[in-house]
Length: 279
Image (cartoon, rainbow, N blue to C red; front, side, top):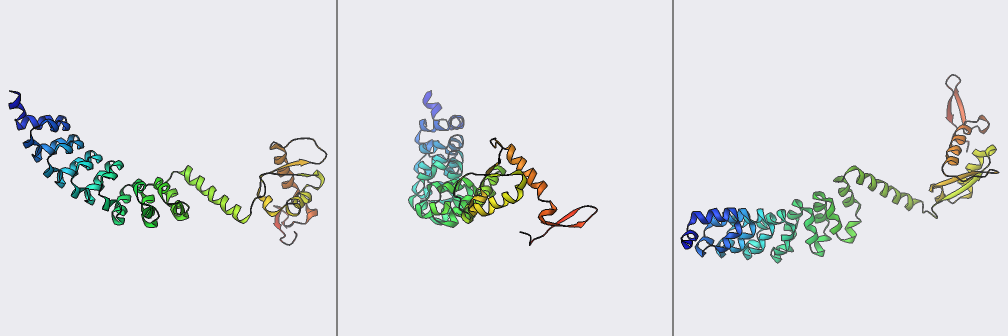
């Protein structure tokens, strides 16, 4: 009775439809039955390992298996492991299927261009030469900005590639990238000597002394550093309050007519125009 059930095609189809790996326990004739094999691999791609050699070399069966389980590529015939469509199908489902692709395909540049256009992270499996290939890396980066971390050291610092990464990132990452690049430009043009500066000024001559402190005493690079202020003859630590007061006093004093920094253009609205030759 048990033998009759195992030889019943309808029963076998029902069994592998419920559990594809049940193909393992079927008779040889059913492992060579394409309909049975298709039903099995559609339920579990790994059932491909129990199909006959002919079916493991059948592209339609292997494609069905790889669409369900990428790693089923391991059980495909050598011929299909070198088939671009089959391998891409497997990689789309599971990147870990890459080691099962044929060796010649793993080093093929045209294949990699197609592969990374579908999934940029496939770049992690590329050879050193392909990781240093700008076009391959650019295509991978456009598909997934995380692919850049698998590029060669030189290409990871490539500004165009980094911009491509930013384009596909959220606003927070783009903002961080912008300020990072801006700081690089500033530090390139104005090498920083330290990380903080302090200067003291008198309240009565705040504008003149501040000007001389920032432009005469300090190296040009230091003008771009954060600073704190203290007022001569006054005790106190600048935790932000003194600097705010300094800005307020400077703002008020800069319009002082005794400095002749501005000329009055309207007596009604008191429009001040900067005299460019004053300083």
